[in-house]
Length: 173
Ligand SMILES: [Zn+2]
Image 1 (tube, helix red, strand yellow):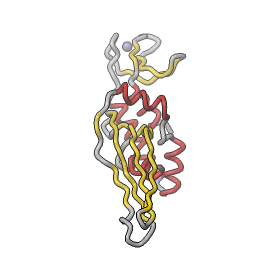
Image 2: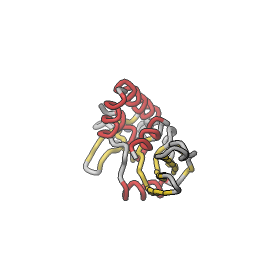
Image 3: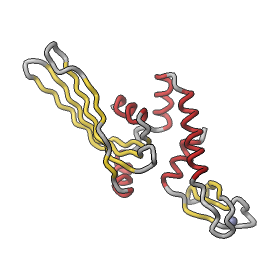
């Protein structure tokens, strides 16, 4: 499973939830193992997708050589994504990414990714509906939202999308 999550992260996916996992062992004169996954995730553009992966391991001479293939992704609705996420949870948590970085010695790329997440978040900062100033992330009793930069003079607020909240989390160090 880690290999699949690693591959998806390497391909730029985030908020990865393993939806289904099937493990099949076959004996056809030699020992074979097949593993099938489907996962939902956000693609590099932030859109929810479903992606499938297949890993094959052949143990004896004459068996099909080992491979891991990640298929192309299919767009899904935010509702479908949220449903799987609520049930399965996120596999590529911050802790997971830290362990991965330690494994691969990739702290630098994590920093770049954080900077990229923050830059993306800046690009989607909305204008205040009351005074048109740029809004900033704020947290309150009901979680994160956009608040006017000139609070408390201006009390304009806007809801923050799940995608923006995800970027905010990924940009935090
Ligand atoms: Zn305002």
